[in-house]
Image 1 (cartoon, helix red, strand yellow):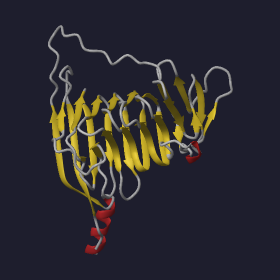
Image 2 (cartoon, one colour; image 1 turned 90 degrees about the vertical axis):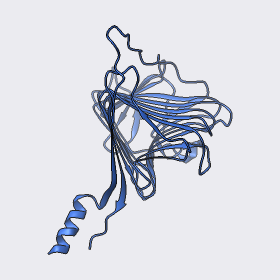
Image 3 (cartoon, rainbow, N blue to C red; image 1 turned 120 degrees about the vertical axis):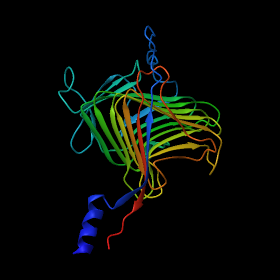
Image 4 (cartoon, one colour; image 1 turned 180 degrees about the vertical axis):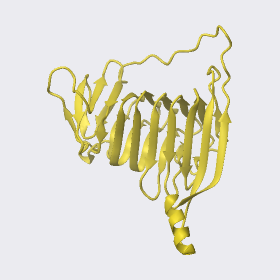
Length: 305
């Protein structure tokens, strides 16, 4: 009976212990009365040389695409806009809107791109790779290798930047990565604003969120309002800041939490990890009225007796 109770308890915690658990209360700097808050960066068109795929569909112009329960992405041929379960791309502002969308298809290897296996893939081999995703309703990415992959591949130029905003939610689940933002030679940044985002790795070893910058540069994650839950499995991290290709580096990793946001990160390699010799800076936006909460945990196997 005792063994059965232990087994049941392990199952209830998903056969994963959370050891140790760390909690950070990040206080906001708080603008003084009369302070003018800075506005988000102005949206701009897709950078020259950039390509965008959603599922197995290349997208380069303004329009609507629909998604089905099977996760297929198809061009919308009706009048006006779809009633539900659609994707809209605004080419003028390089913004992709997900409206109760389900994506289970990936960029094909036949495209001969470096983002094959991703449900949403952004690639620039000669400059910056950037995208804003606007969330409406409940959106899901699953049964793929990487949920979202933004890659600035040039060895000499180009930042990588992804912004996820809106009042909706997104679950991005991949066998390798949930969300990956990577620049091979520049800074890399992921910003989540007022959205509810879950990024998880579904295989034995991988990261929920990876922000990867060039050697000795800056990798940053900012969560302003909303929530981020990042889960890595096995040797993966919930959130990982990576620099260059080596085991160790000296880049600058940072996590900014504001607007009463909650960040939860767990993984076998730690809730939040980096290969940099510089400690991860956890802070709030100096202009924000409030900070947020960061919860981290190391997930270890739980074996039923």
